[in-house]
Image (tube, rainbow, N blue to C red; front, side, top):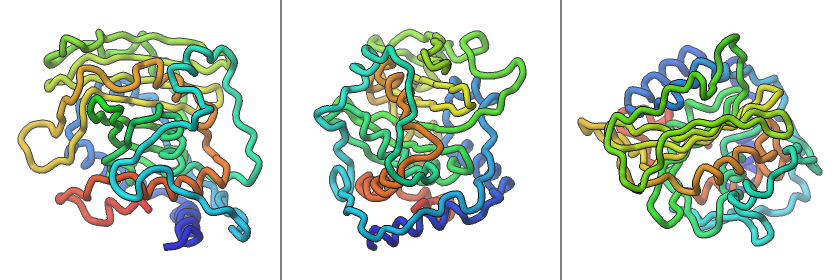
Length: 322
């Protein structure tokens, strides 16, 4: 299909079903949790304070047509795992973390804005990764039921050359709960339930107030029963938006009826390192609205990232995300 058809479908889906089918989403979310059987204690501790998705304003994504637009090329292979990395002039996340002493400032777009999409999230994420890695096994089922209103989500595997690892990225808007919230004081994810490899890091949690007033919580969890643990970062901005990245030392595999958790520990530590995830989470590119050019590039880029097949125990429509 042509680029204009893809973008038309992208924009059309954004204004359909203005009132989210909350009952269906809750049911599917519970089913997703049971089927995947994920032991994510760090996220569970934060769950009480996470955002309740806001309704999408009708017509908010209507944008001008594409007459005269320049063609967009997908970065990476046309199919299968995708090579990722910034342009030569861009700093790596670790370099950004070392030199980022100034407040993050929202970028000033040169064209029209559209609401964030999972495809745009994928492109923004890929562009900030160091060169030489690859993205693979995007989970369409998880993406399908975690993108609604002002909550945006991608889940896939990232391989930096030392083995694939599942990474989950969320952009959302928090609902403030008195006495609640995700903080190191209330965090309960530090205990080990399973083996910890010799090269693994010890659990920790720290909070940093950034120059722009945002609060960044960085943590390393204890292990689950099979030895999986996470590096996690959550940046909560003063306007209520938050960016959360969780990277494991393992892959969350496609469920195939096995008796144990569908998890494979692939490495001693998650890729990139906590400082690298901090730099990505702090980026001003994570906004509820993005330039139209980013949305267009995201549609094309998403085609180049391999996906998990739809699980046998769900409907085919549950994995339709384009």
